[in-house]
Length: 410
Ligand SMILES: Cc1cc2nc3c(=O)[nH]c(=O)nc-3n(C[C@H](O)[C@H](O)[C@H](O)COP(=O)(O)OP(=O)(O)OC[C@H]3O[C@@H](n4cnc5c(N)ncnc54)[C@H](O)[C@@H]3O)c2cc1C
Image (cartoon, rainbow, N blue to C red; front, side, top):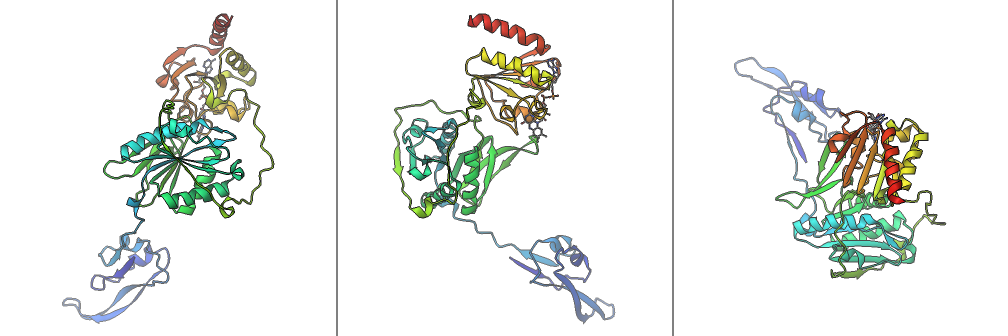
């Protein structure tokens, strides 16, 4: 980076001095000169103190005489062309894959095909099922299987991922936006000196470049930000569960399995897991339910959520969801919240009882297959995305629905 004052153009005004936030510009006396026909007079000249200058460019914009020139050296990024392949970081916890691994493989397959490259699934853990990612679309699986990786620990997980990236140089890495994915991808991105976009809801490949467009809601869901990492590789992003659809499982698919081993220097962690306790408080996980019956402020109070639990008991593989208002009011626990700051779900059927359909709520459920909304207000925004809209009092609809389900179950 270079900056200089063009002496012939500098008129000694103080605009640049005033604009500099770092006090890096002062005026000195210029030689006495003849200015046109006018008598000689003392002129001032701006000089830059390079010890203080940060090349912010404020002086360049302030100067009205084009007397400050700044040359930006083309920031040499890395050799982006050396990086090839799409990676999905799988989540294998206590003997099973989280479904989100297969969802990301579905999207990863699409991106890899667009780029004409391979799709690789990287899995760290213990007792890893090596072939499952191949059945869901991967060309290769890189497996790091070790007893000390049984429980997720951010330190060894991120160090190992970094080592693998240095060796194989993938151009894209997608990981689940789960507690695990968020914790170690961010560390790995810092170590690799590249960017990371969290909580994406869509990915595209930019035409003409191989840049990954990472799309995610921003500013409370009021805009969809399109983010790219043109000068650094790998391009890293996490994506929310239940946003992408997995490909159908195909046991006939063939692929390569690469087993990697690492020494104690990478496997060691300053954190020790003492025990693992499985959450058994919920019978059906919200994200895995086929049917979700959700309630909002229209439920009027905690006692009425009982109606939704009764309804859910009549529907196989169903769970109860809620809007943030219902959670904030303390009517139901946070683990039931659907939306931008809650869970993202995509069940086969989503019932919205007394939920207005704020954008932050829709962000968490709009990809549901069928949305059934019950609301007293015909203008409620939820009706814009509902497949079936019932303009009615939910306290009249729920008993009728219950009765019908009871008769069907009898
Ligand atoms: C940064 C941020 C993040 C957020 N994250 C989330 C999030 O993750 N999830 C979320 O849900 N919200 C979230 N919100 C809040 C969101 O903006 C809304 O305030 C919230 O979703 C509204 O909840 P609601 O629909 O239950 O309540 P309301 O908007 O008050 O709607 C209640 C609805 O119930 C209907 N109704 C009332 N009585 C009856 C009846 N007897 N029968 C039928 N219908 C009836 C009304 O007509 C109304 O449409 C977030 C907000 C911000 C700013």
